[in-house]
Structures are given as C-alpha cells and as structure tokens.
Image (cartoon, rainbow, N blue to C red):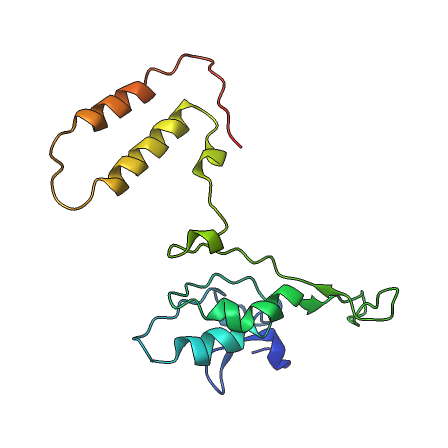
Length: 173
C-alpha cells in the first residue's frame, strides 16, 4: 500500500492496492485491474465501487444495470481532480480558484438509447473486410434463439457484401 491512502484502490478496511508507481520490492508488484463479482444486494456498489470512484485516481469502467452510479457520483467525476503543478500543489486560475481536470464520462445505455453516447459501428469501417465483419456480427446477433427458418436473406446479404467494386469509396459520419 502507498502511505497516502488516497493513492490506493480500497480493497478492504485495512487493505489496499498501490496505484502510484511500483513497489520497491518487485515481488509485491501486482496487476492494477480489479473485477468485482457478487450477488444482488452484496454491497458491490456501496462498499467498493463508490468509495473507489471517489478516490479520483484512475480510469474506470463500471457496469451499472440499475443506473444509479452515474446519478450519485457523476457530478464529482465531471468536476474531476485538482490540477497539480510540478511541486504537487493545486493550480489556481486567473480568478484565484482551483483548476480542475474533469473525467471524460461515456455512457452506453441499452435501456434508454436517448441517454446513451450513440455508438456508431460505421465509424470503424475502413475497408471491405470491415464491412463483412460488421455484417457477420449483425447477422449472428439478430437471428434470435434456435434455428432460423430460411437462410435466403443471410446468404444474400453475405454475397452482396462480397461484390463491392474494387476501389469503391466508403462513406460514413
């Protein structure tokens, strides 16, 4: 653990994982990724996610099916951490107030798409192979459970993506 508690991932009340640099003894070096798994109501959000988010010392990926974490901690993250100078002291702006470095918050909401960041898979298409990959993924994820009845449309879609003229321009937003 780092002597400064705010530089550690909180694991338990007495244990943490150093985020600032590497420990002096290489035998104590650890991967700094954490996966939290527990049953409903076990306290994952209240006792692990929120306290660690409020440390504001790392990048985070949080799966939040209830949608409460962003509501409860989002303003803190959007304000961010105080910007520090080379001596580790907070930087003051022209108005004399502390300058903050906000987190970039991205949301992927599968329940209410109007609250989502609107992922656009077409932005990642750069060549013909990418189109075929996208079509394959779309077909695999939209055909539903069990056997599909008629594979005519699947075959037609795949064959059409294989007939794109050589040198055709790909457009997207």
